[in-house]
Image (cartoon, rainbow, N blue to C red; front, top):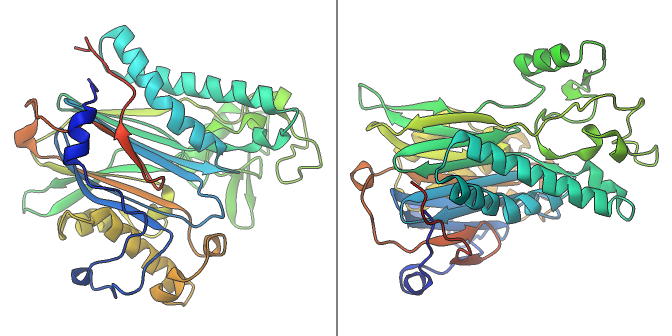
Length: 382
């Protein structure tokens, strides 16, 4: 599925631009750069084109992300870390290799294969936590949301943990764009998530707690599914009172978080025009429909960057400052205004479905200036 052609890559792929500036037709003063914004404005995948952008808010970027393009498959991963970057980085290093290994062993891509890749990644990170816990106990409180999309032979597979989100934009009967959310937000702010947690923990009256106007699991964390967060999954990783933010008042009797992803499969339809994969930093400021209309009504090149810009503009408005003032704020300081944001927009050109397009097969990691051939080669996947 992903057989990488490094020789073609050198000839066909543009260099990464670490610092992105808005073009004049975006209505932005091009003399003012956002030094924390990374993007690839437009590149090709086997079924069309994609646009990729990341903006940093934290002192250390906690969003990690990747796009893997192959001859007849495309992989997108968005990993929104919390407590630190280690879990998201681990996922970025290990989930895709697990997926390709399992696909080769089983000769196919399926929901079960994706679940297996998530499970292997979770097991690997918990093993790392076990080895490191004595030296760095805080690693038990590091975790990450995990959103993955795979397009293979005209079918989209999505797996999700946490509150990153995948949205499809489809043409309606009146030629208008219709946004459809493909993932569930595993966040305690949702009544259905709170009810699920209460039904799983009927003997724990504090499984969800309203704290400072925000619903949190055990009064600590909002997301109910993640990779990592070992202290909320296994008693051996519990943290003592020297970590008050993560200390549980009673011994963990059973896991309160899970790494079981929600799954979605869709045979791509003629009216499906694009997919938006993004961390919750985007969805905090834009609705699904707003994001889909921005993509539909603007040029493809730089569209992920445009979505990030609109979200940042909305974040600035809420703080009663201008976008230009926001862009001059340093990392860390910016976290008081917005979160790290990752956006990947994948356009679907249906005339390319089923064709063996001769395209460079590449691995791109968001914000790291890393573009190169993949280390993996799937043969015999039918």
